[in-house]
Length: 214
Image 1 (cartoon, one colour):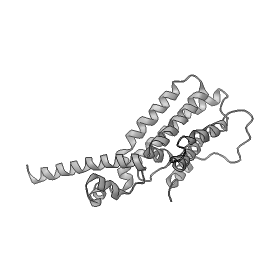
Image 2 (cartoon, rainbow, N blue to C red):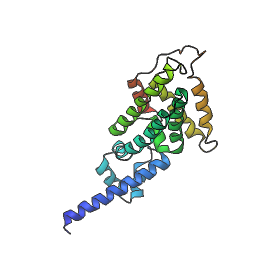
Image 3 (cartoon, rainbow, N blue to C red):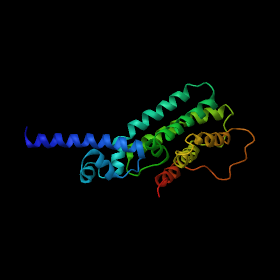
Image 4 (cartoon, rainbow, N blue to C red):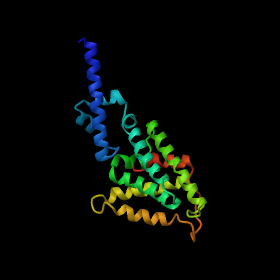
């Protein structure tokens, strides 16, 4: 084996170890886990990690997009299969919130944005936009208040993210109660006019860049 081939194989093994270690660490502790801890789990130096991925966002982009896309797409497909427009919308929101409660990495991916994780951002933005059909269907059926936009779903996911973090150790299912209260506020009927206009897609993105940061 030539030295060049050996180095290439070593680099490939290090990459595989880093990706596996990152996936495990993200799943256990969320996307903010220290990169030095990921390098230690992989059995490589922090310099090896930074040389390969430049930083956190590039590592997130190497691990998370496919997972997020598959999980959120499955939730959307289950919701779209329901005949009742209200049940379809609420099932989709509930399933996404369940993902947040079950997996710290998905909680971060759904509720936050990472500036240089371009692939993950594109997937998350597309999946949120895909829920537009559920919203419009529910509004046409007269069961969802007419002033709700797809960007308003961000409020539900931000709220669930914070509740999951605060209550996971004491009442891990309490997010369901909070979500039920929020969903009732979306029903059409004798709702009060909303005091502020909806956020734009750009405003949601800007907010998600800072959500959850200390």
